[in-house]
Amino acid sequence: FTPYKVVFVNKYGALQDMYFTLMRRDSIETKHETFKRNIVNSTGGYNVRQHQTKTYNFQGTSSFTLNTPFVNEEFNETLEELMLSKKIWIVNPDDLLEVYPVVCTTKSLQKKTSNNDKLVQYEIGFKHAFDIINKVR
Image 1 (cartoon, one colour):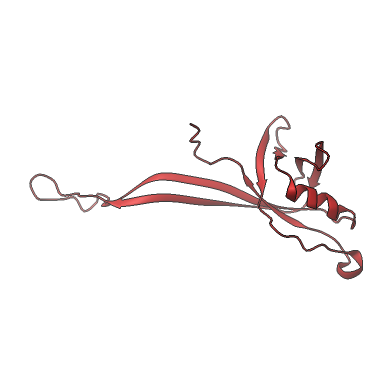
Image 2 (cartoon, rainbow, N blue to C red; image 1 turned 135 degrees about the horizontal axis):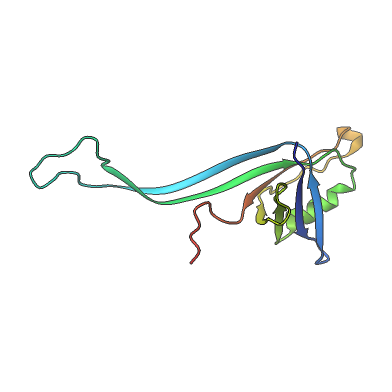
């Protein structure tokens, strides 16, 4: 498993690092709009290989989940700060100079304890804070 470094602004306003060393799952979500167009030419014929349904305005976002290593119960507070942080980045493990802004998509967290759960480990969801097709205006 590739270790991922997540950097976020904690409750004191300082940058804090958190490492996720277990499994990562990636996913993509796309959206687009469609309309029906006329494919009849001026002579009244049409080509059956031509698209009658036209698609446009493609948008896509990528998201992923990261898993923490087995941690102590004290780690719960750090995860709370991560989930409440307004600014989060992930560092590319292949090029440590590449940093991408992300948003935490995990909205709730069941706090685990070593007494109840034995081994404490979490899965946190993120999505990139930019679209796959860049439409910056």
